[in-house]
Image (cartoon, rainbow, N blue to C red; front, side, top):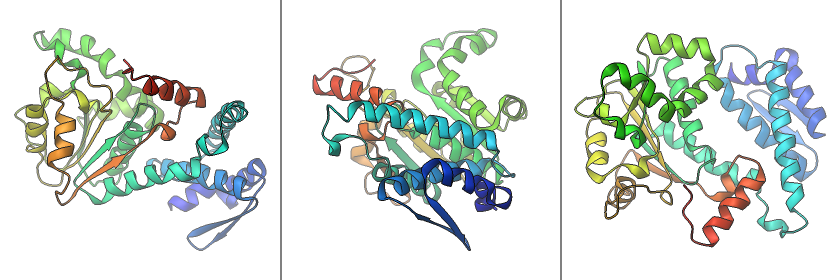
Length: 304
């Protein structure tokens, strides 16, 4: 069914992608076979892989508008990379096909492990892919609810319930933006009202046990070791958790250890728990962002 939704009615989506990438795509059983130049085939394969991820979130074929929107993003990204090709060696320009393996490994880990850590720079797709996997699990009735949380809103701990909603929303807006992109405004609000999606500061998860849930914890580099331990020991029956963060952007008080960094050291050999590392080359924003991150990293400056 997912392959059918990717290919479209009478494989119309494939024909459009063939024209855009100047490749030939043959559908044989449950597989797609590409032929063309190595460069174009690699780009088309990556593009098809990104679209296939979207099919987990829909029960109908991807629309022509969706294909067009992603093609525009692809052309924009390719244009940005070409602008840098004259000043950087070819092997330093991001090779999408190669770094797509990080995302594939990440999604495989999420599917096959109870707890998955995604560690790397902003823009590498850690949180977006985690929420995509959570939505897919909910739609497939693998879990009963999704819980999205981050520690950045903890400063709003001494406020009334009325004040809470409007004060924390800006800090948690990223979650809502991703949900709107994936399943739309109406569906997101409906699932939130039904209690099937919960967006909360990490502080308000304390003391709760989560059964048949899918947790996504973002900005985990700003958890303390005790917060991380408390969170991981409250996972109940049928629950999966994805914990994301960037260890180069720790914003804890001086002298406070990062729970994410400590967890990496303590939990590296635990069964059913996996770590996926992303790099600057995985950044899915325009190429200029990758170069900005590299420049700051080179000079030892932590991005805010």
